[in-house]
Length: 231
Length: 302
Image 1 (cartoon, rainbow over the protein chains, first blue to last red):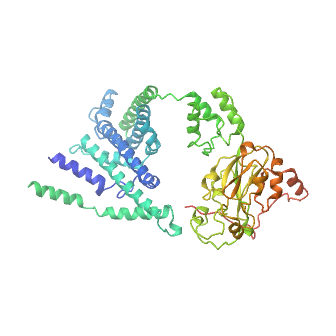
Image 2: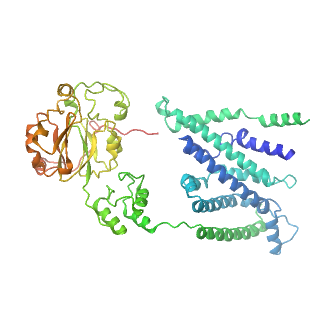
Image 3: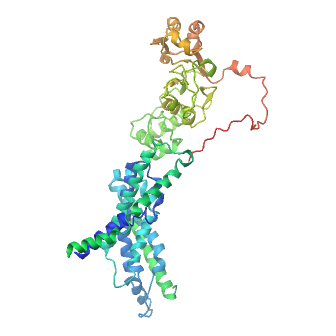
């Protein structure tokens, strides 16, 4: 029961309350670049959710076994190399290199796989996949997961990491589809000439972000409500 | 903190990871390989990669696939022309069927002074927008002169001269881009059997008096030409030239002489007489922009 509550909180937190795009301002590039039409925006959202889940899975595995302080693999390597077994090995310095490496190669792998076995899927979001490789929203998810794997007493499990990733991807999809819907309507509007294009897009994104700020603190409220219900 | 411990383990772990990933990706590259038809690649190489869409496909790669499947002819690429068609035919092992170069023709001959009943138009300066507004100019069929076709052309082959879209046949490759965007549909593609072709330079389907009220040049539908030239027919109030049977311009000599308006005109590359007429005009060696007379029509697109 506690696990379920934690997972709901993590998912809601990533999707709405601490929305990647509108709260942390990561992944702005596709958010502004691919939000001209609702259907392509939705495709981009799905592709990001997909890649972010795979990246989260891999980053959890790599962080758990390699990057966190006293992780098993480097400790084993150190022992094999004949080092002092009492030293704590900490490879956190490698986190950025490792995550970029992992994301890039997994996207490459997924692209090859999809191209071979799902050619139609490849045609519909083949363009987005390489673009997402360097998307900061995905690196952000990896770093967020790494943050939760530092304290040896309260390590995040794989299910928690995956929930964060799917929730975050969902939040990204919600944000980009909302933005695309607004921008489709915006095409019909009489926008002041100096603001046409990027200007009005950024202003819209800012207002949208402010609206999402309204969710701040809702996580605490949900926690209290659940506790009240269970008591 | 970067200690010897970290450095050594980092180096070993990264090296192991690199080898492992390289192996997995290399295996995946071979296991998941998709065979691309070598013919498609060869055809794509032979095409000019203009991606103009003149062939009717979305881009050069789409056309290449269609050619390789045998669904499309080898001679559809307008920018590539005859040379490209020949190379595609070699790749596909088929004969090139003779194809005439199609070129864009504007079916309107009136410049601003000849068009009557014009009112000032202050709206969005595009033909598509102006076409939605009634009363911009008297003739509801003719060229509006806001240059949608000019913006559509990738080859700098069409320009607006005193309100009339004019094709430069030295640059036109026949990609149809202008014909597609013209909101009044007055640009059509004509097979150029000769350097200069006779065309009906009017699109006005109204009766004579109505045409005379809005244009000094437009066709009044007198049927004079179609009665005298058997290769012309009337379609409503406009004559149509049958280009399938178009032989030489001489066939239309009588019709040309009898036309009371100026609706039948020759278009195409400049004729010998045209060149001779301007031969003695001196062109300056170097043309400098004069800021007093040069109009800056660049637009800021955010």
